[in-house]
Amino acid sequence: MKERKDVNFYANKLCITPNHLNRVIKKNMGNRTAKEWIDYLLITEIKKTLRNQSIRMKEIAEMFGFSSQFLFFQYFKKNVGMSPNEYRKINHNLY
Image (cartoon, rainbow, N blue to C red; front, side, top):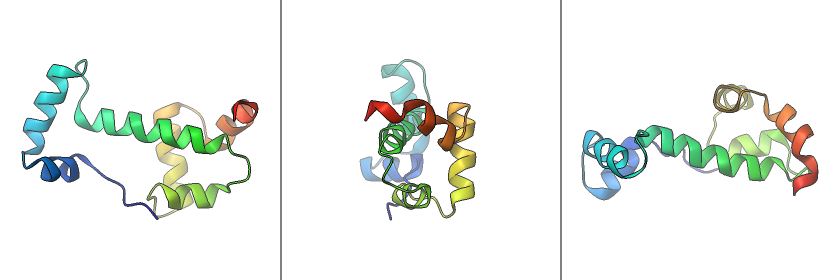
């Protein structure tokens, strides 16, 4: 299982404060916060994985560091506007 990485994780790796990381990212990456970029990149990877029909939802949730399938579904729906199952049905032929 992957550890879910947040702004604090990346700020610590770079030896800077989370606020400074946010300022740098906003200035250089189109006015998005560090959290928004982290979420965007995570959702992009999850979408790629969902296109592989042979990987079960529970496995995908674990792969991306979610402690439960329910939390994974909530996170995905909040960020994408549909459930992982709906996304998979619509995009199953793109893998």
